[in-house]
Length: 267
Image (cartoon, rainbow, N blue to C red; front, side, top):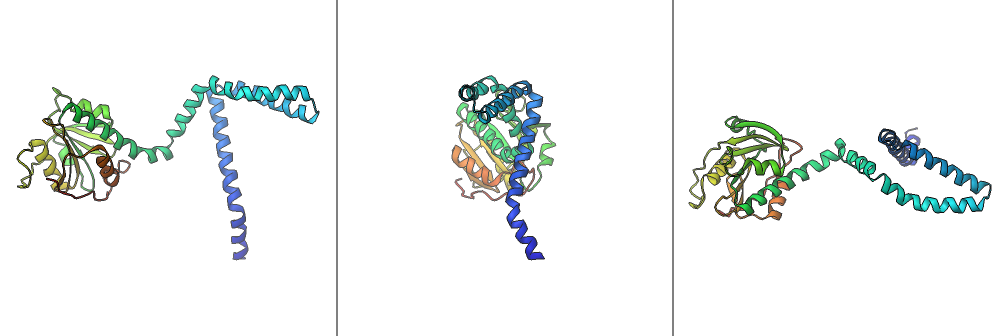
């Protein structure tokens, strides 16, 4: 009995998956067509398709020839006329939870890197602490609560010259900037070069105490450094920073346990 049931499942599981997927896709398409105002156009298209099949059955060659050419042209016309609706439909697909969870991490890392190296080129100092295993809530509480979605524009605005939060640090949790103008503990490490200023000492101190990933942009040189667990990667480039963040940073799960990044000490 069990063997028979397994054999039936092996034979029918693929058709069942295909039918269910197609049914769901067609259902979503029909719902979108109804909501987007394309229903009248689709009615006209269905009418032309029915005429085409009738002309085939009745062997009405002239009508079939005309409709065949109309269909060829109508594909391009359909894309041109309904390009806005098609764009909105694709946007909706991209905004579904399935795609959002898949793309959120990559997009957040991209925004961080974009902001960091834009500030690097402009020699705008920055101090960005990214929460990992240990909560940074206590350090966020000594700053100003924000809780805004992380974006390159937001980071650049926070650290812009002559703004109230330019000299402080920010706390990033998941894909959100939780607090700005934060003060972090200074490192007492003797390994740290005297050329490093307060930002670097604060970044290293926080990294030593909490294991947070901390990115520093030097206001004097524009150099970017990455701190993790008391280790420093100096003058890091875009590709290497992306690699380290991809391995260690999990924006979709704030506070989740991440992998250790490269521990090479370039200090």
